[in-house]
Length: 181
Image: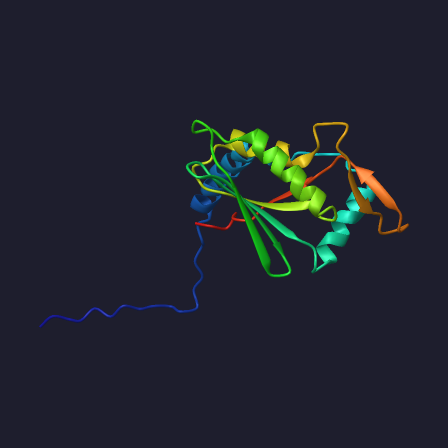
């Protein structure tokens, strides 16, 4: 007969944990993350807005009755401008010219909208995925500031209650479809 071999296990014994593989991964991973972080850039267009305009932008955020302006940009259909004020929506479409955005018509329409709604300084930009970055920058440039020194926009200064003028139309552009898949 064979004798059974009984395995004797000591449950109170200690063993060493080998951390060398974990440290090797960390030593390789940290430099890769640091190097890749150098290539990630955040693009911000800094503008020096007058204090009165900055205060008006803050007031617009608190004003529920202010008009809400959205630009929906589509490479095929053009630019759709939606002005929503107190539930009433007005839609204007700026059609493309020769498969290019009509920037002159967009600018003149935005000047008209700004004159109708001088208290609004923010617009939402909702581009499709196929719209080029350079086109978005050109659209934002059309919306940001008046190109003519003759065109000024009047609005009420909230601190003093006096009427102020500016050549800024919509300096605050917010991308409204950032979280779309």
